[in-house]
Image (cartoon, rainbow, N blue to C red; front, side, top):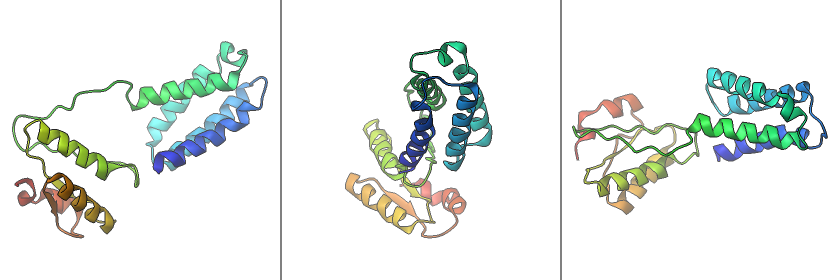
Length: 179
């Protein structure tokens, strides 16, 4: 859901470029202004957005892009490559400590799939011989607690929850880390 909204906003930013035969530096800067706004609205850190748009602009205003047969596609490719680099272009192995407990915190926008991915990660860890426990710290959406309990029950993975207690207090509760 969050990525769909970001994707729509990025597509809107590039629609203006697609209709042009040639791009000017101003065209690229206007597109980057829209990209900047889309990323900021998606709660991306200001510093990350600033560095990202600066890097894309530097690459996109190069003469080979502005002179390309389809400069809009070149700019879109540059943005795509930079986003892939920003998000991590390669898979990495999850490094879980041999000493218990190992804590993995999932953070992201509402609707980004944290609950589902947390359950999948817990199932994966169980296959690795670990004893995962899911902790429901999203107190602002009671349905999220219920969803976590449901997927935990489906996978036979325990879920710790304290209702609408402050998330930090839930995470600090020692009994939450024993199952």
